[in-house]
Image (cartoon, rainbow, N blue to C red; front, side, top):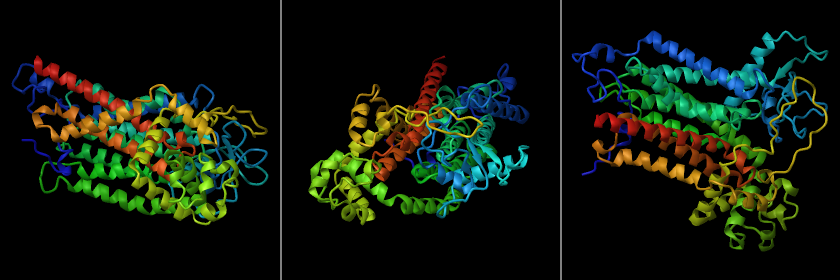
Length: 547
């Protein structure tokens, strides 16, 4: 008979089969020849050394990947949103026209002493990190102020601060994950924990280049990486390793808060972190083992609630009309056909403009736009989502389109070349790309012709299925503890990626879709690599059992 356990039991046995003081096929008893040395745990000094080494290597690797050391830095050009973050630190671009958008390069040089934000800015993790970096670098920079009293600030300094935070998270995860493991197994454990979130960041620049930008995506990337490292550290430790589990819980909760408060589109990361914290067990006493995880989940919600709500309000105040137009005209109408115009409160002839981005002409070509869209954005958005809820096939098409867009995290229409430490003048011409088209037809054709279109939904399905099997299968059939743990981590990451995609398509339709599902693409890659770790663990456990 298959027994389905409660959610709180799911994470109790997420651990490795190489933990000391646990009688398992992978552990030699102390009385066996060579037993004491074989089962000796990794000492705290060595664990600290491993953590420091990992932090140094991760930091150095990311600095090299970004070109901050020994090369030309890469970043992300402003798509018009950079001012929303820069203004919270009173920064202005060091460009002749006073703006960082439209130059065809990444404007990395800024000046302090700007006028601030035109409207009240929400509290975001990205804003807090930027303000802290500006304060520190302004104090340390020896460059004399300009005649107007302003001082220099470079986005490369902001990227270096993010690199330090990535290194910190990786080092803490390595320290936590090696708790209780046998001497000589530290390196494989560290690779299993640090590798999946780190490898994509080092192999390709598609995600890390957002660290050199005045955009909030960097906060989401940092938070998701922290959460993934914390989840994998939980999977490689036992509940009895209290300090290690508490440290991993801290990474999960902190990562969720940082990502969810970076921008509203990353809220699914925070929700996944809270859910994961709530089911992690710490300690062996039945009464108390759930308390730390529940406290971590509650603390994360308490910290993130107000910033998240302020971010949602700011998004609605600034982009309610834009988002409503894009949801209806770039996604719902193209996927539904003319039948959706009446339920959405649009004129029948408005369907002729289906697929048009708001910024194409501000809706001027849509018959009756002022009355049917401009005057009722909230009503239109509610009607569009209700239509999608009543037509699951439309929702499936939209989500599938979003998953296809995760194949293009490059976002080529946003330049990666940086302007360097100088005032930017003029414009570098940029080619047109389908992902940046303001009409959806070219993007649809492009996405439908991409190779590997089966990969995102397949990775998503495999991860969710593997995670489900670790719950419904009999305990003996689930595999080794590390296989079970990493499979469940893959499931959490897959659900996170799906959440990012769903929120993107229901929030702003297909407007800048590749950029809006960019964090989901990273989550899917980490999911796939975590599944590889689970598969390798399963094979190794079978071979060990056979021998």
